[in-house]
Amino acid sequence: MSKPIIDAQNLTAAYGSITALKGVSLSVEKGEIFGLLGPNGAGKSTLLACVEGLHKPNQGSVHIGGINVQSDSTATKRQLGIQLQRTALMDDLTVAELVEVYAALYEVYLTSGQINDLLARFDLVEKRNVLARRLSGGQQQRLALAVAIANDPQIVLLDEPTSALDPHARRAVWDIVRQLHDEGRTIVLTTHAMEEAEALCGRIAIIDRGQIVACDTPAALIANLQLNSMLKATVELPLDQVRSLPDVSNARYTGQHLEMETARPEVTLTALHELAGRSGRSIRDVMLRQPNLEDVFLKLTGHALAESN
Ligand SMILES: Nc1ncnc2c1ncn2[C@@H]1O[C@H](COP(=O)(O)OP(=O)(O)OP(=O)(O)O)[C@@H](O)[C@H]1O
Ligand SMILES: [Mg+2]
Image (tube, rainbow, N blue to C red; front, side, top):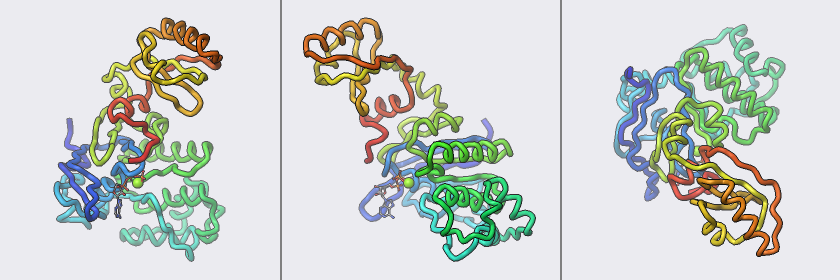
């Protein structure tokens, strides 16, 4: 393997008495789309902030392209494009002014034509002279991405680039992330949506309670745990009774659905029908699905991705 473009070793980070990272190591190769997947409070933003040089870890080191972030933050920041989770874009600037100002912070001075080209990529040309505060949520998120790459960085760090976007806007951002990747840039993004991690990322680190619990391709994460198929049905039955059905290795409710991990779905389904019959319940919407990253997360951490720490 070549030398990683981002190399974080044994990071510990605390806010007062709260330890947000507990000895995290992470290597990202040039040209990857790398995902940090974890629930609220897992430590994703803190990890990115350490990589960005915006939070000083209590222990450990980060190298970007072989340069130590703590000892030469100016050199490393030049290579980075940063989108923070809550970007407080300066409200009294127009869209074009914002892009210009952010690029200038990196000593990159854009011409009017370059600003237009950049805004065109994010479908914001028409908003060029509009105040940032007058943009919709989705437009602001696209502007935050435009700002993140205004200095033409090789490495782009995106903290929840699609949170609070509708499905259409979310897909538009996914397309932009893929384009940035196609241009040869390295992308690291955080998300708590497993479908986003699966759709975009070549490799994923699953992070929970300040620790990386697994790191691999989405397919390998799923394959390595050798999870069985998941049988899904709409029915209300006591979980302890469902768990004791034949071949069921795990069961839980997700919303209205009962989900059962089972080695032999047909045997389990027959037994489920019998149990429902005895309990006077009816079963609807039966389906079988392959295990996904949500199941991996549950298996590794003992709690669901949607539950915060
Ligand atoms: N500025 C801060 N001051 C005090 N505690 C903080 C601060 N920022 C984060 N924390 C704490 O550190 C832990 C990790 O937070 P972090 O923001 O890194 O999580 P996250 O994975 O990004 O979560 P989210 O998905 O909600 O953005 C949490 O317990 C959080 O409460
Ligand atoms: Mg965060």
